[in-house]
Amino acid sequence: MLSTVKAKAEEWMQGSFDSDTRAQVKELYDHNEKELVESFYRDLEFGTGGLRGLMGVGTNRMNRYTVGMATQGLCNYMLKEFSSLEQIKVAIAHDSRNNSRLFAETSAKIFAANNIKVYLFDSLRPTPELSFAIRHFGCQGGIVITASHNPKEYNGYKVYWDDGGQIIAPHDKQIIQEVQQIKEIEEVKFEGAQAEIQAVGNEVDEIYTDKIKSLSLSSEMISRNHDMKIVYTPIHGSGVDLVPMALKKLGFTNIHTIEEQNASDGNFPTVKSPNPEEPAALAMALDKAKEIDADIVMGTDPDADRVGIAVKNPAGELVLLNGNQTGVLLINYLISQWQANNKLSGNEYIVKTIVTTEMLSQIADEYKIRVYDVLTGFKYIADIMKRNDGSKTFIAGAEESYGYLAGDFVRDKDAVMSCALIAETAAWARDQGKTLYNILIDLYIKYGYYKESLMSITRQGKEGAEEIRSMMENFRNTPPESINNSDVMLIHDYQKQQTVDMVSQLRYDINLPPSNVLQFVLKDGSKISVRPSGTEPKIKFYFGVIGDLKNKKDFERVSNELDERIENIKKSLKII
Image 1 (cartoon, one colour):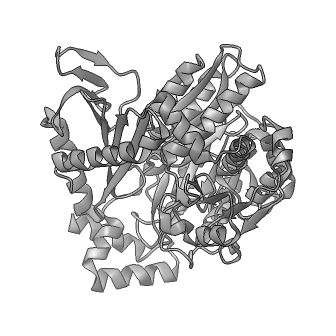
Image 2 (cartoon, helix red, strand yellow):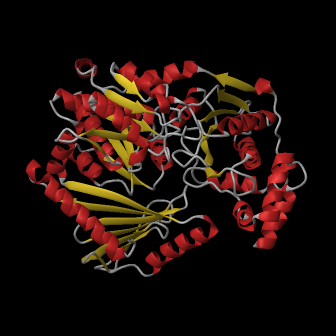
Image 3 (tube, one colour):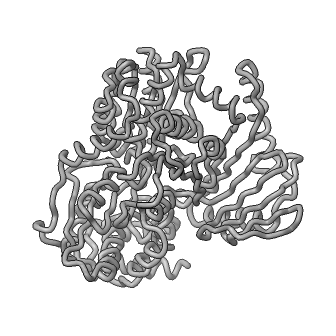
């Protein structure tokens, strides 16, 4: 391993690499063997979010050269795939992260050098707007430079195809093969003609937000509640202009932002991590909300594809909702209003990921709407949409990791759209004299109290990756027979594409692509999912339990009982 790493590093200390890069590699080579190994022991690969990693020098880091080789490989693949077209076109966007503009412009020049026309946004833009732009401009693909909600040290490179969705098989692996065939940095065409690069300004922002406005289901109801107090923070990211624009177009007039967090800054100076899944990321917004007695708080991650929210509980206190709860509220609102507006024809569907709450299936069944379950990653939701284009009507999609989508003009999770429609859902609740939390309790009484929790174990570097791999192998090869004194009834092994019925020992095929995910379904209805993250050095455990809530006064008791059950499941699995 070390000899291979050193050989790679020696290549980076000479040739076409710039002097700063060569100097940084030499410093690692001479004085920091551990970091040298981490930087060169492998090449970055496309995972569920594309190319993503720590910024720095080396083959296992995000830098001008790894981005350049990825882009050249993508160009080579697109030139083959679309050889019959007179003009191949791509769109490029980026978020506020350090080096994002550099990587976007570097990629644009490489596309241009390969005679591919580029539509490059003139400044930071949300990831979902990139998805929209691909279809708007009739592009064959696109990229967005972002590491989503990762810490400031990371950046990434998401690749999209002509449907506006992220790449899936077979394109992902075939693009990697093209990248791997590039042996020398000299093969990358870094300098393209500026004439091939067209700047994209706010004209697309207007069209995109107009399309979001068209999704609104009750302008009269919003008009009655237009002064609902909304606190929004982009957490230094690309939602800064577009989310308030979308909210105003729907008719909301009382929008408050956090001035310090409106600054587009890749160091994310006011938060430890710009992840709306973490309570600390919304702390400043919550403080503002308490100060003005706001109805709802919303915060988006740096590329504005995820949104976290806080609403008032029955005691009037602002509480954060998890991604499953927000998804339940949003999709219940959309489906119920489709019905109220006589829009349901029997041909509609929703999509959720396999680790997202089963409560969505219960709601959809109530309205006789089909539910598709897909692997983790919104690209699989986009694939279902593509397969159903022209034959079925998409209402919404959701994943537990704070990502949602409605309508069909974007093909990725969209926090700009979600903020607008979540605000509309909150106005709908307010119109009934309720909060979103009241609505959620009503839904628990009707469908059962579905409670979910996520636990992530982080293991950094090469040794960490091996430890995560070993944990998955142990769960797969020696699965538990019971968890928390409840028998394991079903084991879904998505890597083997097989379900095992532990009672009958019968096996059933899983009709999804192979993926390193295990699920254990227990006799008491609990579901535990285990998977390594595709974008972070983590192994993730998803817990879903169900309780019977008969009335509102029992809410706290049942909630506490379900929390205790989840904690006992963790102890039973020996992960705490």
